[in-house]
Image (tube, rainbow, N blue to C red; front, side, top):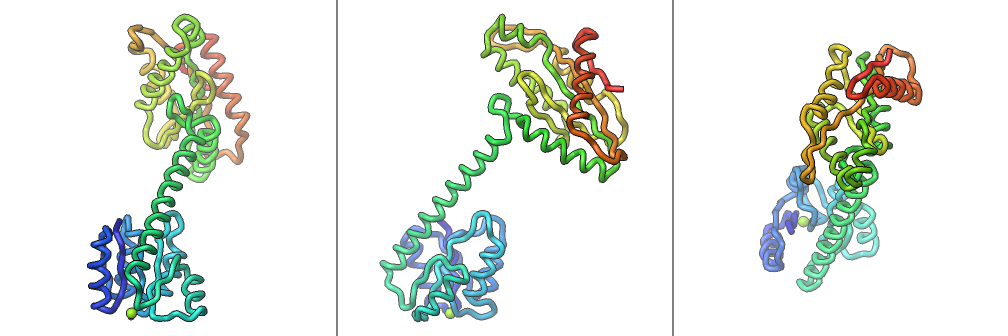
Length: 302
Ligand SMILES: [Mg+2]
């Protein structure tokens, strides 16, 4: 683990560098508080910090406070190093944001033990952050297809509606439903049905641009939101339709010809307000027309 050592005293710095290397750390040296601050501002900075209190330009206390104000997500673990040992000094250091305190002249075994505690805390912190990230992903994504789930794609739709109103741009909101999906589950089993959902998601995502949105809206139904800067038309949705129907799905030794029906509604950013349920109902009615008219087609709501 990298260890930032900030100390203006050259002898002390050299000694800390040598000993921390023996203890298995990768020391990074700073001879004053400003240099230490520059190092901490870099991308992926060292997280374990040994900080001298008295330093020119920016002292250890000021640097502690700066770290606590600027690093919130994956904060550094700071051990303050000082000749001061009055209780009120220790309180000042801890209040400024130091995690721990070692008084000079320090005992080697004690410093090593405190650095180990710091390393352990940082490893735990990293683990917690990873789990947090995984939970966030799970809370917003459909586990089968990896697409956004219903809640998350509706949240994105609301953001896009607000943005299109701001930009006076147009939004295409589409509900896509796989035709005769129940028959696939009935004839080939649910595992093949799951494969169909995954393969279809992969194909459809390939037709979208990075700033379009897609989510799994229901069982075999998907919500697609397309931002139309230039003109409004069925093209993006025709691309989805054809990428599904152009070639049969090759799954598990089967060759399955598939199609989707798509109902689209348009939202103009010049509108004063919107009603989310009404927009979704309009797209749903267009989808109903697409099914009724023979499936494998895109219907734009009037
Ligand atoms: Mg000093």
